Image (cartoon, one colour):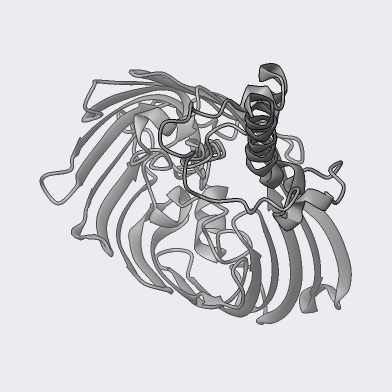
Amino acid sequence: MGGRWRNFRGKRGLLVAVLMSGPVLAATPEAGEDALSGGVVDGVEPSDSGPPEGSEPLEPSSGLPADAMAQLVPPDSASPTPPAAPAKKKKSKPGPQQEDSMGEDSTALDDTPADEVQRVRVFGRVYARASADEREKYQRSLSIPSARVGVGTSLPNLEAEVSADLADSSLLKDAFVRLADDAKRFRLYGGQFKAPFLQRRLEGSWSLPIQGRGLVEDYLGEFELGGRRLGLMGEVRLKSLWDVRVSAGVFQGSKDDLGVRTKEDVAGRVSVRPLGKMLTLGVSTYVAEAMDRARRHAVAADAEWKSGAWSVTGEVVTGRLPVGPFTAQLLLASWTVPVTVEWALQPVVGVEGLQLRGDVEGRGHSMLGGINLLLGSRFRGQFQVERALRPGDEAPGLEYSLQLATRF
């Protein structure tokens, strides 16, 4: 009797061990089909109930060794560990888009946060132009009007820039240092830079929607009224008071017909923005040989309106040149039409007038129209048609021009 009971207990222990390891063996690829999985072993039906009362607990180890059972029983999977979230890539902060160098446009970096201004900037641009002029019997002309390259640096209270134009006979363009207080309200310029006169000239060439700067600016430039000069200039900017900006400086005089350097020139400009960046109003003046004869001087008033895709600028100038008194008017309008995310079309129209009075009388005018193809802020193609009567011309003439421009 005792032998039969021991044999029965052994079979029951083996059966329990097999039932406990069955699910594991079924989930294991190496496990084959087991004839015991039918649930009947030697005519004994498996039961979820425990052993009979008074019997000793069944030890699974009586059927399988303890180390084998440890390998068959899987770890607790009731609360699986969630997979680790993929590490987020840190997005690099794009640097500031510089619309122009400070030498081209002194306001280029004014509203750029200090932490986004690059310590050292390298910039450049190339313009390639093809034109055909009626005054020259539409003879084709290919040229590189500008091949500018420069480097600038920006520190908390100090900025400097040097640039050269490889396509110009006068190689050096800008070379100046600009000191400022912490709030950028007061600035001091020293070196070679643009005198604060004529809004059309102070505008960066890339920001202008036309090729060149127009008939009036070219004519006044022949008499060296303004432009880039060696000098010293102070500037005050009060953003809380309509963003008023006052600039005034003393500049090196030009050379006379004998090649002698004349006395110093003075220039100044006041501008305000009563409607933020939408409207800018300004007044500027330039006096050549201010401490001597002052035979060349001019005063200009300008206005610029920007609303969405529209931009309209106007300016009137009056003064005196060695040939006598003069007046001039400038008007320019453009409209930017987005085509895709990067591409845009920009129609542009402009008119200019110039009147000479006194001993030498004459009139000049210009009417132009064109369209620009823009790719972001790095490339543009410009087609322009201009009908102009310049001082010295016998009759107005047409000029067709195509310009491709890129910058970095």
